[in-house]
Image (cartoon, rainbow, N blue to C red):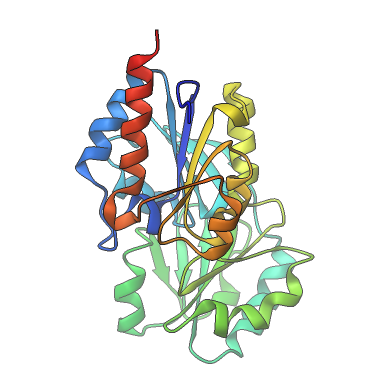
Length: 271
């Protein structure tokens, strides 16, 4: 595997760059500076909101591209590169549909902050890990819907078993993504990590063959297809393992770091 031509590295966050405690390895930050010396651009691509990603990657956030809300928004140094809103007419319908499902928690993900209507502490405590800027409201249907990028839905047991069957019929008209064990995302049909990655590649003049991607769940599928060096984590969903060209160790075994070590070594050895 010749990594010497890689110019762009893109990593998912949860289950990939972050370990199970939600932390980034210090070795990653050291390697990031090595990548930068070799003019390799780094992008974080996540279902998380923008502010949550910048919190996790505060040391380097101003230098990298951040693809948040599963491709709903992409920013560089705080400047918007790409924004794709969820159509207003879909939002009230989805809220009404999802309210009928037992045990779900609905999050309206806006460009600047997110909105929830539950006051249940068990969910809010968990929610705080993923959303740094949010507001608790009495009724989600009364929120101004013009800047909503996606709707995230949470179930404490399984999003694939309890939420997906209810919204599966919408797959022809919007993005329906099981984005984790407990999360499912609904967004504009053009809002996904693959679309955002293609936009970034075109902007930087970088090809698929020069792109390296890491992912673990179904919301990573589109971007997996946009890179030759596509890596599934050992802890990845079977769909990702089937789609990725390569595999690395789990997020708890620094799978991303292990490959970046090889990438830096390949760059250092290049004549």
